Image (cartoon, rainbow, N blue to C red; front, side, top):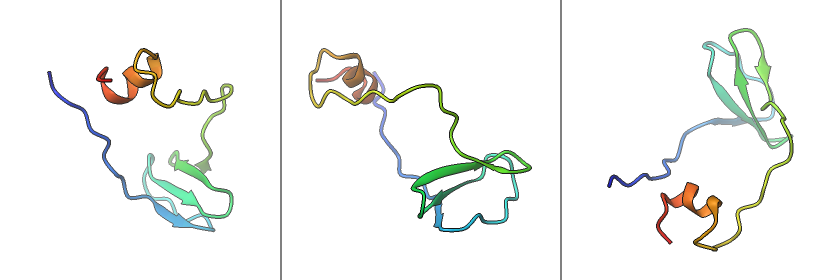
Length: 73
């Protein structure tokens, strides 16, 4: 079984919109604390489709833990 690992990514952190070059570019707005994605024309915040569910904090039988660590308690 292959193991998956979280990999850090480098996203520009600034309080103003940078000049976007390519669709898919991202930046972190240090004032609003939101990551924006460039669609080729404009910077967009993440789409909202409801509320987020908190991770349960260690219950190994939860779906959240299975998703985060590949099913290993």
